[in-house]
Image (cartoon, rainbow, N blue to C red; front, side, top):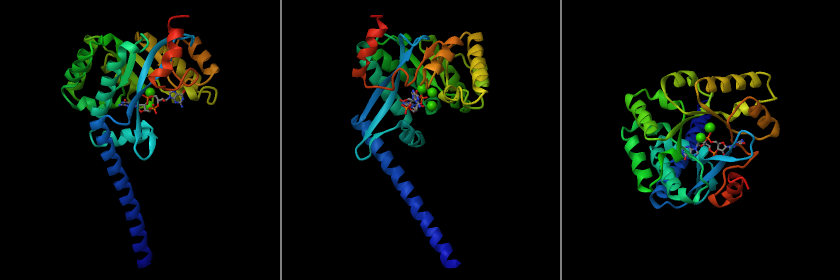
Length: 275
Ligand code: C2E
Ligand code: CA
Ligand code: CA
Ligand code: CA
């Protein structure tokens, strides 16, 4: 029994070492990518009007081509970035990149995501302003997507930063709405312009009988508070029809397009200008 115990122990520790090693390698490669800007890029996902026919926005989503593992999804490297404090630099890079491309992008607002770590720094407002001013970008062209995790970091600085950013013209969107347990609390405490209904709600449409009334309630709540509402993860015509009939303002999902490199936005520029 003692033998088996020891074997089991060394098995687990070997596996753990492997995980620690992998994580350390990932962190190193990410640091390098941020220093050299190599392998990092931004894709843009179209956001469409209620009827799905017109481009009304874009969401900037980071992409990383790892030197060994190839194209890596943010779901895999963002948690690591957040743990080792690199997420703030990564988001800043995405905003910088987006602003640098702004005049060549379709003439619609562009959303960028802010990780919760952003709000632990007390110069968030200044850091964002420096970037947009450097490129001469009008803050009204930029929407900042935040999640309710920001609220967990209970501090006055984050309230102040958000308020100042809104006053400067940035729009604030509450991302992944409905997935946490303080979404409603959040709406009471922060001024935002838009809620983005999490894709899990949209994708349960037709699969569970609770989805339709839940979605209607979220949309009505948002409208009652004077907010715009974007649905994420719209993949089917049925989902689009339901959401449109119930007054959702903006649609985002594979039904229209996945996140694409800038060059592939040309097709959407045409729909945007109505030709
Ligand atoms: P998110 O902000 O909720 O972004 C939407 C995600 O859903 C994107 O995944 C997008 O590709 C995916 N998606 C869009 N339409 C559909 C659809 O119809 N069906 C399905 N199944 N998925 C769809 P992505 O690009 O892999 O990003 C994952 C998450 O990583 C994002 O979720 C966001 O939380 C985070 N992220 C991405 N880029 C950044 C960034 O620059 N900064 C920060 N802080 N987070 C980012
Ligand atoms: Ca988002
Ligand atoms: Ca989301
Ligand atoms: Ca998400």
